[in-house]
Image 1 (cartoon, rainbow over the protein chains, first blue to last red):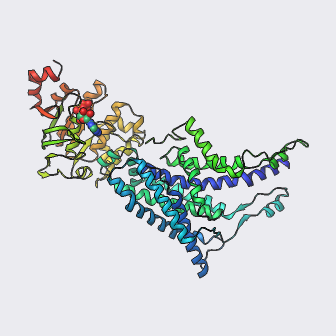
Image 2: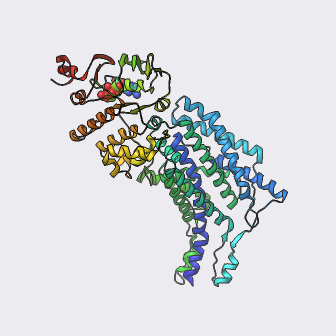
Image 3: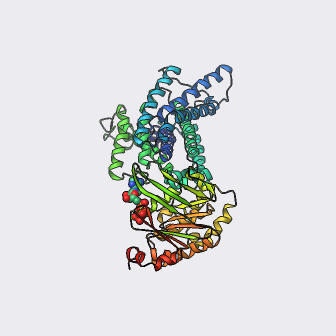
Length: 336
Length: 230
Ligand SMILES: Nc1ncnc2c1ncn2[C@@H]1O[C@H](COP(=O)(O)OP(=O)(O)OP(=O)(O)O)[C@@H](O)[C@H]1O
Ligand SMILES: [Mg+2]
């Protein structure tokens, strides 16, 4: 009984949230890693690209809601998502044409691309605040829980329950579909292989007749779509707040680097590593241990490694540890 | 055919008024000391460097201002000296990338190339980066062949290859030329290479020092003394 309660507690507060958050990070890190693999720079504007995608999806969702269009019990946001994706791809391609293409022509160094992407990040953050404002939006309609806390307790008779939100399941299902399709594209199709070839050896790709501008176009389309899906899932599951996307850039980059930069499968793994660490380190294990410990041995403190206020520090710490122990990441990535 | 090529990297000229040519079905070999500008001349012919002066003519057309990827489409294939395979792709994927622009049946092309290099058929699912030096060079040549070139340019295809594999590679290259492909190659193993060459070029400091048929260069006392080690 005690063990069951401890298990339920852990599942509810650590495992399920980590998996959900991990999936969202994975999708984001995939976008960063693909842009890095093809364009060879760390794209700091990816967080704002996510924010932009989520914003468009929110605006379209509220439009649908006022018109009474819905797909209950599934959130209306999923119906609006394709439009958000198209808008995000459009702005990514526009930014590439207006900004990054110029530096490509000049064969600029990666650091110059990165600085340009920082500028783009600030620009987009401003644009987003002009359009939607600085406030938070909660836009998850539809059924809220698949299994609620109370139902679970009623069925099992345990003291602790496991609740599964619909948005958590949606996150998982969508991530699974997106990742499987993306990996299939990259590893099995002609253009996917061309992207890997270009990422591996740009000159030789040229000598094989692969058009570099086409490869870059594909990279932005994929990155834009991934950013929109990740941003929407994250805000749907938690809440949409523009400034969160500036902060989330850190764990996303941590996930990318941990996975081995430029490595799609690594980015997915990295996302889950960061999410699990962040959630586990900031969770208070007091109640959990109380269930397991013998009577009178209950822990006194919160048994929380660090306060949730410091959760972003976790990404830093993992990042440093990985860079010290295995600088190339889980799957050896690119260094330049 | 290229004439009067002058080019270099940022200001300094590496190649000076250099000429190279080869006919259909023939093999031209470029030899010369390290740093002579052999690789630079090859890159210039392929349009990977801009020429300061001179021109490149292919099949009667002036292609001096054509981009490298366009030259692939008109039938020029190039195996660079360094980084000449996709290390993170499998052998088979390397070949597929070679055939990227090809409209014809990729799998028949692949089978033809596998016939030429049977070892690659065995290793088709291995990453090219995990192959031995000799096998890698075979992948590099095979990748270029998949573009179905009419002119094949090889920059030191036998670098880091054992003598047996080198002989084999030369045999393959002769076979390729016999199918009507023009071959230009840079070689360190000058003696063996000149033996199979129809045309030989000795490049020193970016300029043509000797131009003659392979046999005559081999017989030339001065060439032997200075460039073939006696
Ligand atoms: N990318 C580059 N930038 C600047 N200088 C270069 C570059 N590549 C080669 N060089 C210089 O050009 C000169 C000729 O080099 P090149 O590679 O053409 O010689 P090579 O004849 O092919 O020599 P090797 O037999 O060693 O391959 C060398 O002095 C080299 O330092
Ligand atoms: Mg060379």
